Length: 223
Image (cartoon, rainbow, N blue to C red; front, side, top):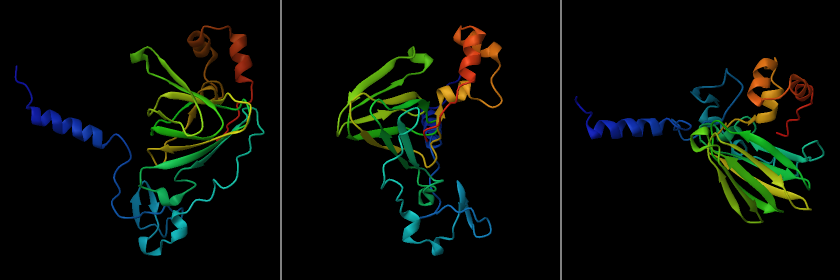
């Protein structure tokens, strides 16, 4: 049996790594635009002609005011992804502001296309993530205080809970211009059209009445 040269294996691994995240930009700037007539380059989204870009394209002011936490979850996530911040297009990064009322929760969710690093600016947060089946769904959790930083690996289910008695504020950086968000409860019990009750009753080992009750709830999206 012939073995592949080690150089070939290294090249294969390097190629996989290169395509693991957002592709590298093909020009200095590529401000996203919805005007397909003015879009002259394509790289993630249609791009404004670089010669027409201005400083305002690279400014996002959506973090100036606190998010409205008057909702069932007691939290508000304000994203600065490429859809809200066109200057991020092709740069492979984004941010979010997270506001929490006392007891507020950013419920279990995943970012399928980005790792998240979070820093606490005010208050106290209980955070955690769960590993894949391969690592026996192990929970890694910590209580974070002002100035603490925690990282949530790409694609893994994670959450943040304000476990203090005061308002909490955090900011997150993500390794994609469009990391995506899948809130677990919303996706499973709020899917449209709904997932078959036969699937959910067997998956969660519960009675159909429980599934019907959960599917009838209003699954709030705090993003």
